[in-house]
Each structure stands twice: as C-alpha cells, then as structure tokens.
Image (cartoon, rainbow, N blue to C red; front, side, top):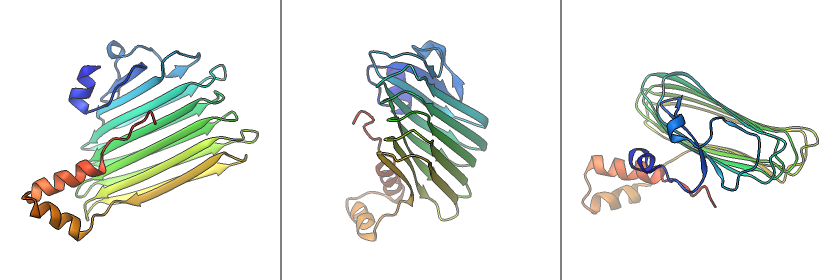
Length: 229
C-alpha cells in the first residue's frame, strides 16, 4: 500500500482492503475481491477510491446481517476534469458495525455525486464527510440521503458536505435524513469554506506568493481526518 500513500496521500493502516483506481477495481492491490462484507474480519475493512473519474461510476457497499461490530472505512481522493457521475450506495445490516467515510474531490468539470446510506438494522453506523475543491466554471451537484428504517433504532448517521469554491463555480448541496426510528444521533450539514482577510494577510506577510497562499488554503481545507478516531 506504500504507493497509495505516495501517489494519493492516502493514510493506510493494517486492514483488509478493496481498492479502486480511476473508477476501476484493482484486485492486485486488494485483499478482498468484493464490496460485500459477509463475515467479520480481525482487521478493519478499508475501501480506497482514488484517481480521476469520468462518465458514470458506481460503488456499492453491502454489510451483511451476519457481520457484528465490524469497523469499515472509506478513503476517497478523486479528480474530475470533464463530465462525471459517482453513485455510492451503502447498505448496513450489521449490528454495531460502523462505516466512516471521507472524500476529497477536486472538481474542474461537471460532477454529479449521489450517496445513499441505508441503515437496515438497529445500532448501525454510516458517517460520510465529503469536501469539494470547486474550480472556475465547474458544477458540483452533491446529493446525500440517509435512510433509517422502522425498527432500526439507535443508529449513528451523518452526511456532511463542504466546499472551497471559486466565485464562478456552481455548488448544489442536498443532504437529507429520512428517519423512521429513533437514532442515537442523526445529522446532516452543508457549508462553504471561507477565510478571513487577516488570515490571508498573515500568509502574505510570511512571504508567500499569491499562488502559494492559494495552495496553503487548499491544503488546510482538504487536510485529511483520522478515520480511526
């Protein structure tokens, strides 16, 4: 997994892995051959989704009812330069099994992003945070729906979108929670990152050029989170 870290700055850790590059499953970099988790593993399961995508792409993750208390993670770092669609479906039937996901998307084209998170058992967890760097004239249409069904109490659910956008970029955020049972927690949010003039002036005062200031702000915005927390 060293090359994943070097090429895409993905933090890897001991885990069973399912790796996609440029929207294509890479079995030679994966320890599992399917996105269906049908049994428990001693290690966490880590889905890694990296590279450039175009056209229609699907990622369907299924956590079976036989799975108990399994940790599952998604790390995504994606570039879009033309028209692209990414449809993600997570179906969690594993009691006390929690999926945590974090996507960073660099969009210079027209992206349609759809996330459907299905809580199909009590005490399941699905939490996905998505950050978009939206460049000039790009379109980012981001939709996320969490479904907590009847009799699926005590779930943990979160859908979070944020963007750092050029003034000529178009951003559409649609995070939704559909709740039919009392969760432990359920949240959704959407935000646009902004930086204060004193912060920007401080960077200039430190001797950075205009391009370097932009790069520092982008790196600050896209700083990876620790999925294992």
